[in-house]
Amino acid sequence: MAPSPLVPVILCGGTGTRLWPLSRASYPKQYWPLAGQGDDTLLQQTQLRLEGLPELAPPLLICNEDHRFIVAEQLRQIGVEPAGILLEPLGRNTAPAVAIAALQATASGADPLLLILAADHVINSPERFRATVAAGIQAAEAGRLVTFGIVPTAPETGYGYIEAAQPLDPAAPVPIARFVEKPDLATAEAFLATGRFTWNSGMFLFRASAILSELERLAPEVVSACRAALDQDSPDLEFLRLEREAFANCPNVALDVAVMEKTDRGAVLPLDADWSDVGSWGALWETGEQDAQGNVLRGRVISENSRNCYLRSEHRLVVGLGVEDLVVVETDDVVLVAHRDRAQEVKAIVGRLEREGAPESKAHRRIYRPWGHYDGVVEGDRWQVKKIEVKPGASLSLQMHHHRAEHWVVVKGTALVEKNGVEELVGENQSTYIPLGSRHRLRNPGKIPVELIEVQSGPYLGEDDIVRFEDRYGRTDVTAVK
Image (cartoon, rainbow, N blue to C red; front, side, top):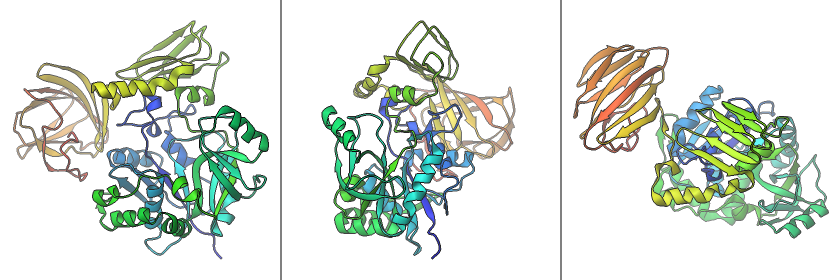
């Protein structure tokens, strides 16, 4: 029998608030380059580390619809054409996400192996990871539901545990005895002493038909809601948008709870590949490449006589002088300074900012769109300034505003500007004025990005002041600027 195709299913949900101010709802941690010294994001690393696995097929990705263009662009950057990008209208945990993936993968009558992965994990030994996945293929093809248990390095109390029913075997999965929620320290120490416990990674390998069969047996309401959401889906460019009302009826439940804790087909395979879920700045310091003084430095950073620090700059120069055990993270609008042992408490700060309605809780000054991005530069009473970058060949929507006028100054490239049906080319150091109520659009007909400075003026400058007439990206929501 020919080997089954191996379809990666990459789950891109989550906001990673413990990595604020870098990770925010508008641009979570999985879309940032957080591990290693390169520029690949966690999502890109998740896909790239699979290269070399047998019968590897194009991936299926499941993400929040607000992040769809980020996901598509990051895959394009690494030359990967996905089998599909499925858009969740709201979060419903891992059991519905896996059910959606299995239903989609079997829609044409195929029955591939599904490798379920989170987009925000760090694995510093990709060769050992691939070897472990390969070791689980035979059991998965035979109908077992394989989960990868992380070989513990310490009695951690922040992870769930998996107990094997017999001694662990790195060459083949063994039956699961039970799942255990986060234990206290004494219990975790006792677990490690037995040699039968691993950390629960949330990564799985199984046939699509096998997981669907167990979901239908143990959580039929999940499958029925997901099937209804897929039956009423709507294609959107290269995306597949799940029907909101049907998907909202789906229980919010993890795959572990819905299936793995109840099934008799579960098996665990130990994974020893220098894994981290990068759940905090402290974890990034621990897993990062440290210098001789124990510092992890990212971006434009100078460290003098500093020890055991995580220092990161996204824009401005950061200098660490004679400091120890600190986390310092600089972004476009926030600087975080925290003791390394207390960096996880940043989640409470995010909650406080949300209660106060502070924009820094959810979004950066740079906002990404399918055509490029824009940065908020400065704002005042009845005016604001933005820097806009439009990718080659991209176009903003045809739109108008009721309450604001705009002045565009091109500083790089050449823009094709349409105003009330009349087009004009605007080159570097040239400008154009968009009166209030004017139908307008900007295109980049060239081969280099167009950069422009936009000055808005008017009594109301909110992003919901937009009427969109045409949009090549299929956007119909008025809150998506440009």
